Length: 625
Picture 1 (cartoon, rainbow, N blue to C red):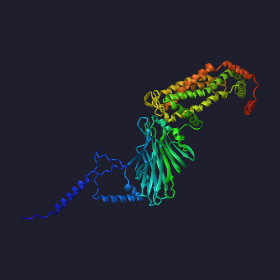
Picture 2 (cartoon, rainbow, N blue to C red; picture 1 turned 90 degrees about the vertical axis):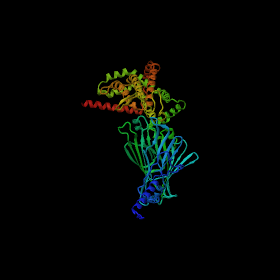
Picture 3 (spheres, rainbow, N blue to C red; picture 1 turned 180 degrees about the vertical axis):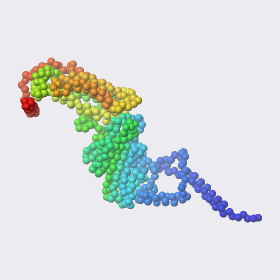
Picture 4 (cartoon, rainbow, N blue to C red; picture 1 turned 45 degrees about the vertical axis):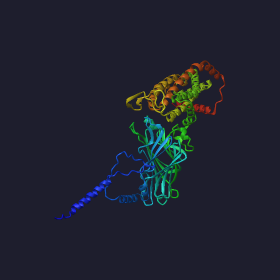
């Protein structure tokens, strides 16, 4: 029998086929998932199809790991340890009011949810979500590398210390060398303790290279009126003991910063530091533009250098993710955080802090309906202001009595050449009758701070947010009775009823007040503007402007002005018909005229002397002509 020759080619082919088959069987096995019992890793759902990976080479796993480790070592140097041992994952730390999600990559907060609040369209309210924020430390190493913490993996460890939850995120160089972000959350607190510290990195971090902290955030839209929200969203900061804000589309470099607040109308993201940041750069950019449905309102940025202490980083900070509640922010003693709530400057803010906030809080203690609280608060304010209304009406009645004498004076001293003499005699008649022009102006001026204080109080009061009254679904925003199919510049794309009611009320109030104001004015003199015509135009102009402006403003403010004007009209009718007695006023003025004139004050004497000199100078000019 003939022996078959050995077919070397077939043998090699079979070996190759066998090798390919074995490789295929091995590579077709599902990937091994991480241990689901690990507290810092996500549990893999084994019911889902497992992704099959195809290697690009035939090296064994140990060879691949060696090459990967070598590449990481070459790229990251000492910090390759964190990349080799690091794993992707997120850790949740939360209490009853705040839920934070911290990513292993960067050790930073990637989600901040305020659990007791929703957006205007009833969705969960997040200040951080979907990568709208970034927290990063940029530093150099002794082996001439520039690294960013946002690109590196931190190792998480979540523990509890009594009621306090502690999350330690460590960027490891070795088992004993690391950079740590430490988060400590207490129950029912929006304020979270945050520390940045390093251990054993003095020989790793290059102290000659600047170390920079960067914190960026794009503020989400959370309120119905984006125009109002954008107006009240602002970057605030505390520097050298005082609180200030940064205008939109502006950048400022500050020598020292104690805290930075990225404010969104009713909520804020705040970073506080015990050791002030030196040489910080703050930036605020308006994101809204012309898009009324924009997802963001403002874009904020902080860039500040960090200092090493004995070659190590050591900063004790705090994060605040929470509401702009004046009383809550005020409870953080020594921080001045309450100043980010826009209550107005100067006297307006003082009135809100010492009068309106305490009164509102008191009424809130026994009334649950915020519309009724506003109405009751309006009644209290108008009753307190009624003496000023009475004073104004009394001055008006006195001016009405002496008006015929002032008219005669105009006839006696006609023309521009007698203007000074006419003014002097007018003041003399008013003084003898016991009438002062300022007695009518002062009550009106005293009411102006109240008006402007409340203009700031209602739109900044978070207690009104989401509270409904009658047809208004949210007293912190505008009410809607009809949605327009188009947008009117300055007015909006909706019709609000409370501003209409407030405008009607102020129209009738101004009409009633017109006769009173006319009594307060001296007869129109030659060369002077006709105030009667101007006031007539104001009766129509003011309500129209109020109707347009308040259409996009807080319905609580329109409700206040509507009730306030109604009450003022009622008080004016009572004073006019039941309090003011014109006969008594005439008798009082006649009595005043009989009394010897009081000695002039130094101010009055100087004023009279100045008018006399002006009169003599005017007479000389007339002679020259």
